[in-house]
Image 1 (cartoon, rainbow, N blue to C red):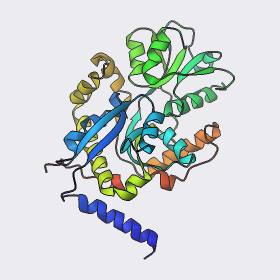
Image 2: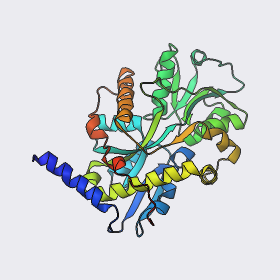
Image 3: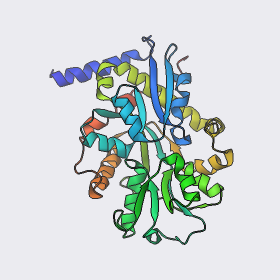
Image 4: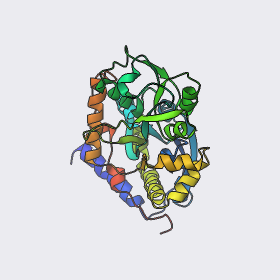
Length: 318
């Protein structure tokens, strides 16, 4: 048996053996956003084995989350797939171990403004967060309408949590962001959804995922499995209980009527498969065509399906 096959066999055995057997209790540090589509980490504690604890840290952008992960301040964190691809291209030792959410994006313009089509955005200021799926969606949407994101519009960096306010105050003319901020702008009367700009069938509606370091996988595979299990269990529980999902999301400060509207544009997720990676490859090709990255990453190293493949959806008490 080659050294590589032996290492894979040992890792798989470690993962399998942790199911149904006592493991050393661990305190996990988890990064995410305080949004309805990235909410699952706030429920991990309920779905981790007895003795394990989860401390959740809320961020406002994926770059900060990834930086904290690489610095050793987090054990696992949410990120956008676009940012994960960019990180891999830069040679950073990150690995995607589970999906986090799909959809959740919208292009918003001022309700009292003249913009009626994407082409009408020429000369306008558009809010975005670099390195996110929303940036790639925005660039793709502009390109499809014959607009250059560098010469025909002005892209303004605005944190997700500030976009609705920036639109209301006239600091920007439009933004492409994740929920609930598009729905907030609509509910308050100053925003209008111009488009839900998801890609064609090649990329689909993939959005965010869970990221760990390669060292975490190599040194603590059983811990990664426990985290992925908790994530999958939390996701399935919230899918079954819409009221509980939105009630907790409401505690982040978004009114329930806004969340009810946003929920139709959100899909909680955990599973990944070869087709998922295929969509990520298509996303990477779009990113390179748009000049966001200059080459493709090694997708076989960026994505690790073994943990979602061994997910145990039974609660820890079972």
